[in-house]
Length: 64
Ligand code: HEM
Ligand code: HEM
Image (cartoon, rainbow, N blue to C red; front, side, top):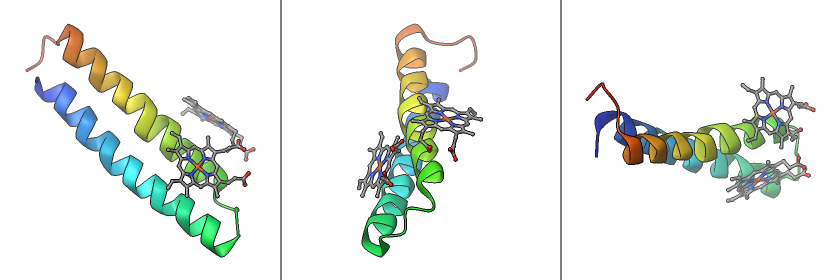
């Protein structure tokens, strides 16, 4: 796996874990005030970065 793909995947996993922790915290405290923070941590940090990682894994990069 090239370095850019690996970097995106590792970053996605970190955002995913942190975003899920924030979701759990919101659910347990029943205070959904950080919902936009949670939503974007998940959709940008986890979903989009996973997709970018998959792209670079499939198609590679000129930077290695
Ligand atoms: C441990 C796992 C998770 C927990 C405990 C959790 C918890 C929550 C809670 C409490 C809300 C607020 C709901 C509301 O106020 O209407 C929320 C919203 C949201 N979550 Fe999660 N979540 C989790 C995982 C995820 C994942 C994996 C994703 C996406 C990949 C995600 C995406 C979203 C989005 C986009 C919203 C906003 C929904 C809206 O616009 O109403 N969450 N989540
Ligand atoms: C850097 C790029 C982005 C910016 C600046 C941005 C900004 C915003 C803003 C200002 C809101 C309204 C939040 C509120 O009502 O308080 C919002 C809501 C939302 N956005 Fe984004 N967004 C971005 C990227 C994305 C992406 C890539 C996705 C999905 C793949 C997404 C999914 C959502 C969803 C599901 C909501 C409704 C949930 C919520 O209110 O938090 N956003 N976004």
